[in-house]
Image (tube, rainbow, N blue to C red; front, side):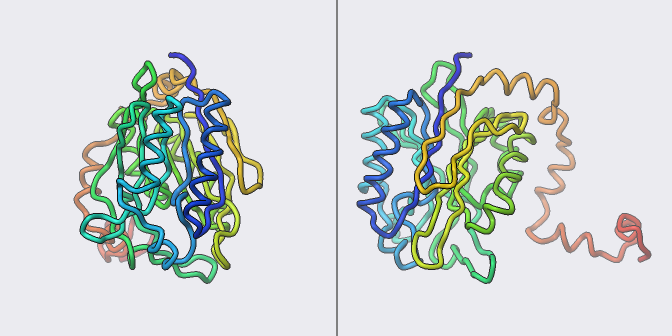
Length: 302
C-alpha cells in the first residue's frame, strides 16, 4: 500500500462562527500544502462556548460549515474529515454530527452516539439537555487508491470501546476521533484512551482535539495526535492553540499487527451477544447480585 499522509488539526474555537471557519480554512490549507490527503478537524470546530452559544451557532447540513467542507475538499482534492458541527435538523432538534467531505464534494455524516453527561472537576456537563444522540455505527471510505475505510466517532465516544470494535469489524483501518476534551480529562485520560483504542483494534487513530479557553470556564486540553496500530504515538501537537500534525500511515501495518495479535478473529461472539442483550446498567447490577456465583467471583460470601 502507498503511504497515506494524514493530518490532524488542533485549534481553539470560540462563539465567533465566522472567525472559527476562517481559522479552520487556513489550517486545512496548510495541511494540504504539506501533502496531507486526509485531514481531520476537532469536534464543534464551527462554534464552541456556552450552551446558548452552541444553540445560536448551530447550522443546517446545507449551511455555511458543511458547504465550506464540501467545497474545500473538492478544491484541494482531499478527504476532509471535518470534525463535527452542531447541526440543526429540519425538526428543530440539535445533533452533534461528524462530517466526511470527499474530493468529489459528496458529504457523509455520523451522529454522535454517546452524549457527554458527566461531572468533571466541579463542572456539570449535560449535552442531552440540548442535543439528541445518533442512532447507528458509521464508517466511510476514503478516495485513496486502497479505498481505506475510516470509522467515525466523536469525543466522548472514545470511552465506549464496543463502538470501535464494531468499526474495526466493518473493516476500518483508521479510527477518527474529533474532540473537545476538557483540560482535566485530556491530562488524565486522553492519551491512554486513544492508544487503547488503537491497540485493541490494530488500527490507526487520528485524534484532533480543541485547545485553550473557548469561553470563561470552558477549556480544552489539546495534545492532538496520530497513533499507530501498535499504540505508538507517531506525532503529537505541542501545547499551543493552533497546530497541524502530520504523519505518513503505512496501512499494511494494520494487517501485520492484526495477524500477530488476532484479537478481531478471537473475539468471543457468544460473550459479545450476552453483553449486547443486557439493558444499560444491568452489567453493574449483575455484579452486585447476591448469587453464589457472583460472590465467588468477588472473592466473598453471598
